[in-house]
Amino acid sequence: MYQVKRISRSEFVPIRTLNYHVRVWGEPKPGLTPLVLLHGWMDVAASYQFVVDALADDHFIIAPDWRGFGLTQSGGADCFWFPDYLADLDLLLDHYAGDTPVHLIGHSMGANVAMVYAGVQPQRVRRLVNLEGFGLPATHSKQAAGRYAQWMKELKQLHQGSLTMKHYDSLDAVARRLMKTNPRLTQDKASWLAGQWSMELAPGQWTILGETAHKITSAHLYREDEVLAIYACISAPTLMVEASDDSMAVWWKGKFTLAEHHARLKAVPQIEICQLPDCGHMLHHDQPQQLAAVLTRFLQSP
Image (tube, rainbow, N blue to C red):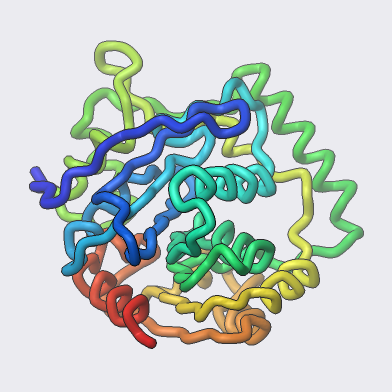
């Protein structure tokens, strides 16, 4: 089993109508910029533990479980809206950082939230790090009718019980599922993550800590022009960290490419792109020491 070096504490913070679960490492100190870590889709805040352990310096670190993930329950939501993540984050920063700008780091979906938030509230972000957050393929207005129809169809499937999450018969089975998704994940890390990523609903019935409604397609189209306009408002120095494996080629099969993503990043005023070797999309699991070194260099640079 993986041995944690830096112990986190769990806190629950009233945010809007929810009781948000937040993992916190370290203590706030004068002159110490808070480090905010945002996890991705179907993940949890504890996913960052390996990177936190690899950081050489002490930090005050805040990592929320997004609504409907981990220990943050959604209150019965049957679908999720991207703007809610922005508002939740804004209020979390009020609670933990006040008027102090933060270092904002996001992975995958969490990186997409971080990028948009940094453009909407640029005064609140000192430095911005995007870990494998690529956004989505551009859409067109002609797709709107079909998208709404798909959303309504999936809502019906959720309420009829035909849209469900898979159950596992043991914690070991959850760990094997994690290693199947990410072949680079070692057994000790997978076993530790499985205990953070899932819970036992009944004897022999484990499920991941992600609400089924997260599987429903968004009713809203991805508006590239809006995203680029928001990117242009980012004032923080920004680091894009990509894995050596091209996740986009696997996911989108040419419909949305890394080159197109890089073209979008040209809208960000201060952007640096780096690639981490020998890792996939879960680069914070695959190469935590290398990632910690990259983060330290970027966060400490003038």
